[in-house]
Image 1 (cartoon, rainbow, N blue to C red):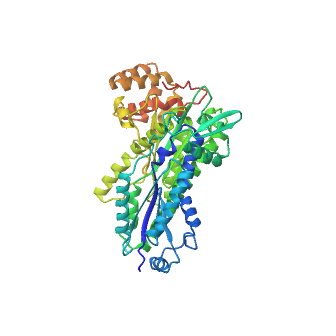
Image 2: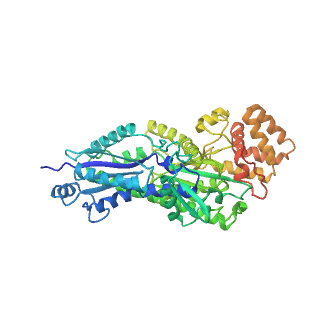
Image 3: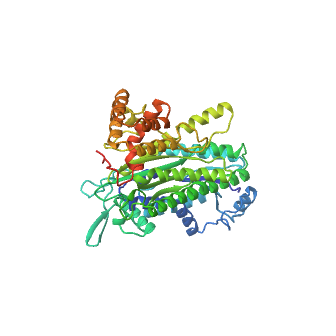
Length: 521
């Protein structure tokens, strides 16, 4: 009987929701670690079942040899490639696929409660046309996603103590340092993984450890970065090929290079920048861990980390510049990234702050998407640029980023997003111009309260803002005012940039000793 290969793809659904269902950093880190190890667990299960795997990890994929080994029974499965949060595997037949899934899902239920795996597959009668087979696999994935429950259903009985965030029963109880702790199965699994990740106790893993000064300034930032137009770049990379040998090799090389560009170069740049900031005592942060970077996700072209709010812009820019530098030095012309920053209080729900950082990242990509459309129309290469957007949470819950900006009437007066790297330096929205404006205000000793007053007035009405600016600069020396105006020759662009500065001037540009940072309402 002829063996019919089975193409399958594994992924974890609602990853960010799973990671951020808590405000405890140890659990956030632990949730990220569990997801990062999810596919390793899959192959651990395969070894426990004595399934036959390739003798050498990452050996070259040759379709005819793989199919011959399947037919002979000397091979049960081979990983085609792993990346973008998915693992694509070719099985000898559907029975092997089903056998591994039973073991894998049971392990996930026991060791990673609350995680939602997705696995789909399709039988390959011929296993010749990679493009057609992969499209069928993606169609199966879309159908399954529409059928699946999203998770988070309350499972606790009304008489049981429950987690107020996930509504899961508090089933794990233990004592530590004379204090009793209660966690759900999901939270306990994340907590254990978090402890193992950075070898620290629960108190040191709280978000409060990253703030500037305890009980004085509790502002943190979550930074989310994502690669630009990666799906389109995959299609371009395959260049119309549909044979398995070419496509699998190309995808493996692509995912490996993505890891080098984003997960290695980008992460290294952020960590080194944070260490340099600590050595220089930048902003004069006083807490022991204020300069630490808590990585949440660093997988493929996706990166998320939490840091002190004062360091957020500096670190986000370093990440984007590292990706751009790799692109230029290695002639890897298809890589760039954009980032979004959300500034929040350490006790604000982290999942909500992450959602706004992700939406700010989407906003930062708008210029890239517009440029891609123009380039396609003109049959020109798409520019690879890194853009940055940010949002400062001042209170309240609900709404997405666009709705918040519309509700406050600021959508039309924001200069954001700003271009950090790539393309020409003389771009009118180059972030260096924003930096130059802030530096000019500092040298002119412009009163910070006047900048705040301008921001509040400009948000209420643009004409009021212009009047407030005229009042604030009336006593300023003419040469200083001329230098301020010269940074942005266009009046409307200057006021939008000033409004952006009014939100983050104290945090990102003024020395800590000179700033009297406003707390959120």
